[in-house]
Image 1 (cartoon, rainbow, N blue to C red):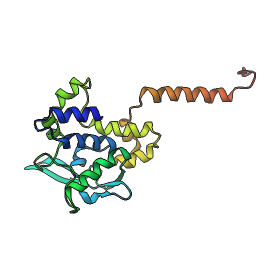
Image 2: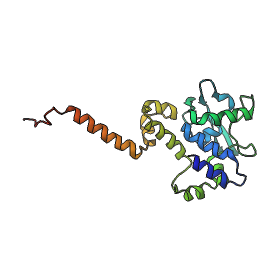
Image 3: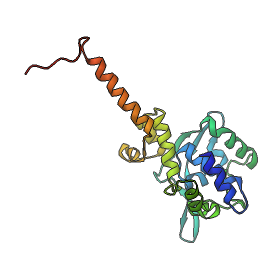
Image 4: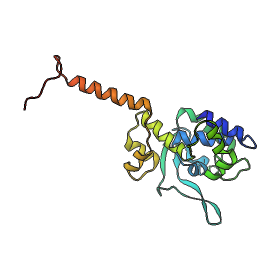
Length: 205
């Protein structure tokens, strides 16, 4: 993820580090780009290291607008250690006004997935890195999959993602090869434990 973020920053016309910060923050919080754009300083709890997701930035009639989350309710997302320095830098940079946006474009504008795509030449960059099918929304998939692979229960993932049902959350999860292999090994261990010391016995019917 850091490689992708660095490449996007390097490809942008102004080499604006904020583009990379948006990408890393989105992946580490399993958030939509519009939700990242909607973060205000007051939404961050630096003591508990959590983010209360309250709004998203989306294109609307007459331009870009801020509105409630897709699920129509606020949710709390953990800010993991790997993203805390980034968040702390942004909080220090924007000052004490709780209504100040944490992430903006280089001129202070609101960010959308299309703005991120165009400013960083996203399609060209991901193709050059060998990720030609990677979309901006896949950052959210990545974050949820990381959490699932780390053992976070799916009902907790549902709350973090703000999904209305477990079925929606499960569609986002893409287990990696190691987790699939681990599942096979776990099943083998389970079956081995059920066998008798003399080996498996035939069942008489």
